[in-house]
Image 1 (cartoon, one colour):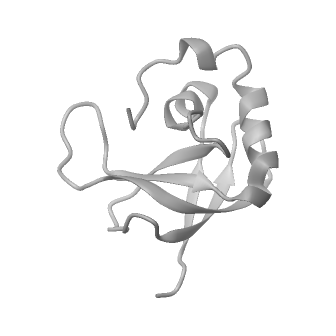
Image 2: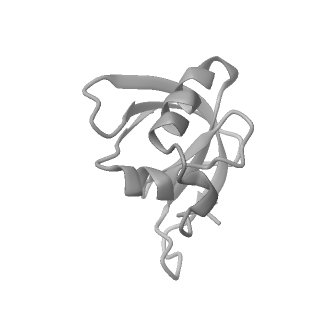
Length: 110
């Protein structure tokens, strides 16, 4: 199975806060998608953070799946756990979210 790159452009910090998965040791993010993915599947994510022109290439693994037709405030998509070499991406996200992670609103995942 070939790896397909997903693209995610996060428009603002509140969206980033809702999508970020701080409970993962290497960090992770929710990516809205209607395409089916399998748990454990490796993915490449082209990530653009708020107020950042640079696209970051992040590799990771699917650890969460919200299927098509999911109910409540959730949307279809996947949670991607960042790989070990992407600690710097986690650090950039956590710097953007400084002081907000402890009072995080409900996320797209949990």
